[in-house]
Image 1: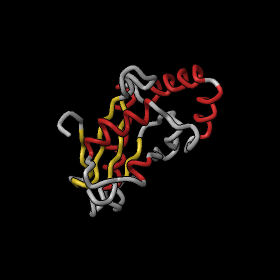
Image 2 (image 1 turned 45 degrees about the vertical axis):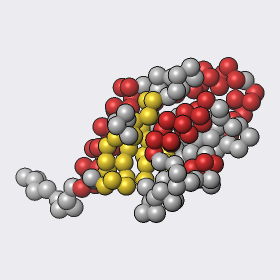
Image 3 (image 1 turned 180 degrees about the horizontal axis):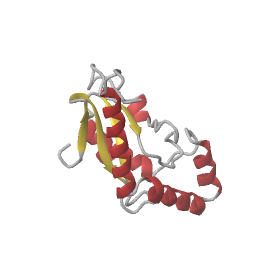
Length: 161
């Protein structure tokens, strides 16, 4: 994964974020997403959990949770696969060839089937608003602040009041 920016969660090698760039020659081009990866103890025999942290408009990705509907990860995973396969093949193919007949995001699926040009415009709007380099950096900083807040003590501060 040396070609990717990877940041561990609490120094845990099984829980990390990967910076993922949208594939060229797609409406996702120039988009930068932060993808959360959790490797189960049984990895590589059991598939990892992956989810987009910043918003993405796609029929097979839940906009709220970032969950991905991709058979090769969810159902047909093989121990021959690794994280490189996910980021260099599986996710780019998913973004290039969405499957509106098996949606997690019904709005995206309907728009893609009804008006592909409007779908592409909406994808590019999401890229600008949620997946530009600046938006991704802001998302990462917000997540780090949330992690720091989680680690803070429950002991209240002393004030002059």
